[in-house]
Image 1 (cartoon, helix red, strand yellow):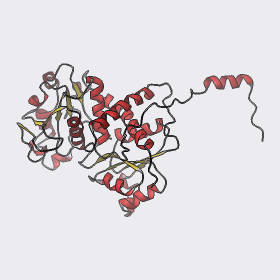
Image 2 (image 1 turned 180 degrees about the vertical axis):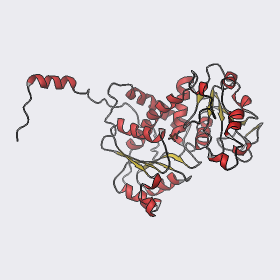
Image 3 (image 1 turned 90 degrees about the vertical axis):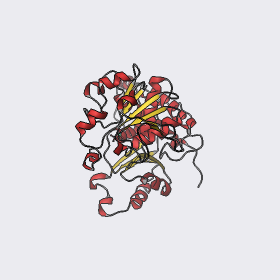
Image 4 (image 1 turned 120 degrees about the vertical axis):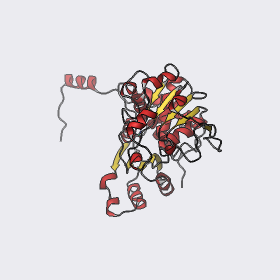
Length: 352
Ligand code: CP
């Protein structure tokens, strides 16, 4: 069958309309040690974190192009498997994979939409999905440790997109990236984290990342939302990355002189569990408002990982004010997740 004839003028028009050639992305594989998974920041060195942040700069350049597409991961498959609700993390991983040219398959596993609802075990679900040949599995699960379980049983790389109250490493990486872009460096910066320190996976991964990068961190929370032994007015002296974290007696003390104020989401179930008297009282005691932001350094950043209970963790005028970088955190999430996916997929594979 002959092809439909095309007039010469139309050919020229099509050529003019044709999208520009996809530009390659200029990146060095960043996990030089051949890291296979991203499960938390507790096993990242400072150099590894710096690699991610540097490579995210390259990804931001890709995102600024007219044609936001590179063939870097063409022929590769990224699967997102979410057993909990998400807006930012799931969508940004999908966008990151697609911009890099990968095929992205989204599996929403909450709400009875996978065979888990019929009694299939997590292991069998994982093995079933891997049988469809995936290169990276991005998994969010309400149980701490589920991504580690996946990493032990799969040949694919695993990225933890949030597991229970344990870790959310790519959120911490995008937070570090946002800070570094504004402040120029992280070492020596004073970061105040206000909110649910005990149950927050974002807080935990950020504490690892910030302390590894040399930031000075102060936390502030109701006593019921602090880890056991973290007493207000003390400095943590336990070993590991949390050594040196200050526990403030109140939000004013925490915020004073800070370069960054990071408010955390209060999960409403904490109130039902008796950890909080009321959200109104939480807002009064711990909410970030204009008066409290004035205690921080001039131009200090206001951050929140989202989703935000506006008027509880942060006052509306501050949340949308000039110091807030909350939406930029979301945009940077795409660049950082592109850097993570690219590196995991492009790492040298073993023959085994
Ligand atoms: N910060 C964060 O994890 O947001 P989502 O729950 O919307 O992914």
